[in-house]
Image 1 (tube, helix red, strand yellow):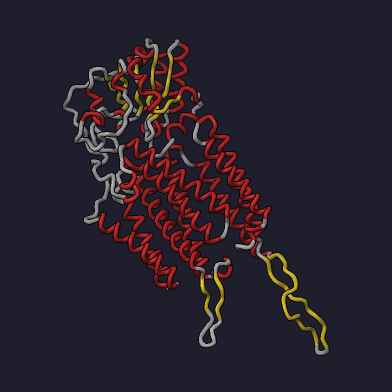
Image 2 (cartoon, rainbow, N blue to C red):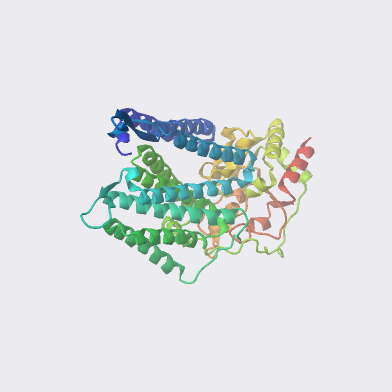
Length: 504
């Protein structure tokens, strides 16, 4: 398979695919160009897949049959090759099944469940890397990475190239970590596991020891090709994936999702080296590096250590999700009519969406409310925190689905200075990312995390189901009890629809 990759046309096709992937990432960096970025990514993947299929079509070698004096005889070697029709049909059937599952899932999945879907897809990428590694280990000659040795005494055996053994070991290890870690992330995001961190005694020593053992086994496998080392490092990699993600609480899931995305890319790149496929190397490196950069950005947005994310040791300080909030402090309750009056009299309203908006599916009603306000001459903006929701870009996707104009959507660093000149900040389902305690309370688990300065607005309207709950970080939001805050306790979609009616 390595010989095929030197074909100049194949190399050119993979280069074009790589350029498409780079342009796709560039397009995905902005909501206004994200659709074009998606299309370029699809084109690049189509080029890579078709090129790989065409250049690696399974063939059968066929010998020439000759008539001899005693009947038909075969020539001494294969003289030509023909396409293995059965193998091709199997490949096409697998593609069709995967496409059907993907299309059905994409059409049926709710936008609120998108983080779970992403985690599930990451697990499949990791599992695919593991399976490719298994196939390469069991049949290295088919992958062009082994040489058959026939000793004078004993059975023949295959010697795998040392570099391929390192690539194979690392690819399987990273893929296994990605798979098991993504499974835990899916279960937490989907509610099958609680958001509270599960803290094992001595977890840091266990994690570090397991990671060191995996690296030692990879080195041993590369040196000796002992099969037991390969299988043991695979088992340990599956285990460390669980151990790294279990201690992480629900508040930190956005970072986990982006980090697992990076892992899946590095796993694909490692398998690309094993297969001698430059397209996989390019794609994996792009996904891995962009995922790592995104994880770093998310860590800064949540005041987390990037190294602690990799080690799986963060998130333990967060309180238990769902913990009851302290409600014995005075707070003000408002109605839809109150909110409609205040916003209609404002010159500028900044809307701050969060996961509560996603759960309530309130984005369309919110855009209708904004349109009503703009008809009244009110300037409307949307403020997006990097970790609002449960995956990077979650709020941007929801607002785009509701056809909110891109030029009205601003990131934290671009909008924070505006709150002091804003008449009304309308917070809908965003909790931790608006908590002023992150700037003042050194004992708070979210201390140091950059938050939206909504408390600086003239009035804060805060939609929340009740006063008896807290955000993912497990801490009460002191914004609820500020003099300029009015609580609108109701389902987010229902409350926004009532405000729209009140606006007339």
